[in-house]
Image (cartoon, rainbow, N blue to C red; front, side):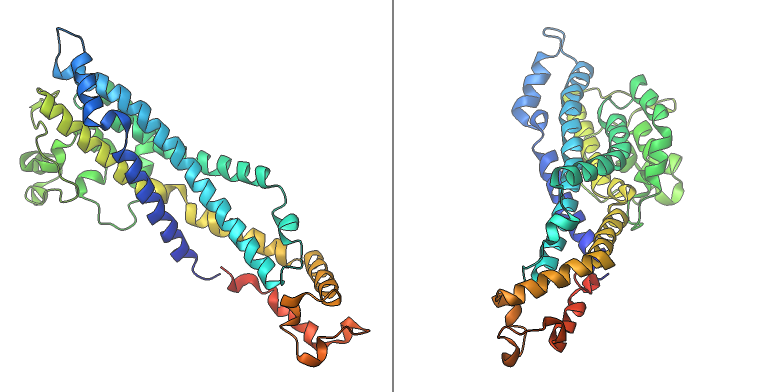
Length: 327
C-alpha cells in the first residue's frame, strides 16, 4: 500500500498541533487562574510549596482531560480514514455499489472499536507520564514515589525516541522526573549525573529559565519562590507535551494499527463474495444508464445490450478492484 508512512506522519503532525494548542489553553495554566490559585493557597500562610501543590492539582485535572480527548482524537482520525477509503472505493465503482453498507456497515460499533483499541494503547503510556511529571512538585516525596510506581511504564516510553534527537536529559524519563528541569539547564548537574561530556551541551528545545538547581543530597530541593514554581511547572508541562507528541505517539503504534486496519478493509473489499456483489451492481447500473459508468465505455457500447457479460469492456471492472493503489 502506498503512502502509509506519509499518511501516518501527517496524522502525527496534525495530532501534535492539537495537543500543543490544548496544552497552551489549559485553564489552570492561564495567568489569571494561576494567580487566583496562588493567592487562595492557605490564605494568610501562603508559601511556594502550597502554591506548587495546589496549582499542580488543578493542572493535573486539566491534563487528564487533554489525555482523554487526545485518545479520542486519534480514534476519530482513524475512522475518518476508513470512511475516506470506503468513499474512494464507491467512487471507483461509479457510485453504483453499496460499498459502505458492506464493509463499514455499523458506524457506531466500528467507532467504538477504534476508540477502545486506541485508548488501551494511548492511555497505557500517557496516564503514567502525566501523573509522574505533572501531579507532584519536583523534590517532593510524592513525586519520587510516583516515579518509582510508574518506573516500568516510563522505561517503556524511553524506548520510543525514534528520531534520536531528544536531549540526553530526557532519554530517561524517570531520571527527569526524579531530578526535574534543573537537569536541562545546570551544567554541574549534567556533568555529575549524565557525564562530563554533557556539562556544556545544555538543552536547546523549549525555553527553560529560573528553575531551582538546588540539591539536598541526591534529591532536588523544593522550589523556594513563586517564580521558581512557575518556571518548574511550565518546564514540566512542556516536557509532557513533547513526550505526548513524540515518544508516546510512537509507543501507541498508530501507524502499524492504521495499516493493519486499512488492509483488513481492502481484504473485505476484494474477497470473492464482494467482487460478485460489485459486478452485479455494475451490471445493474449499466442497464439503468448510470452516467458515471457509461462515460467509461466506448460510444457503441453505451446503449442497452442483450448480454452484459458479453461486453469485453466490462472485464475492465476487475481492474477497478485493485484498491492497493487507493491508499
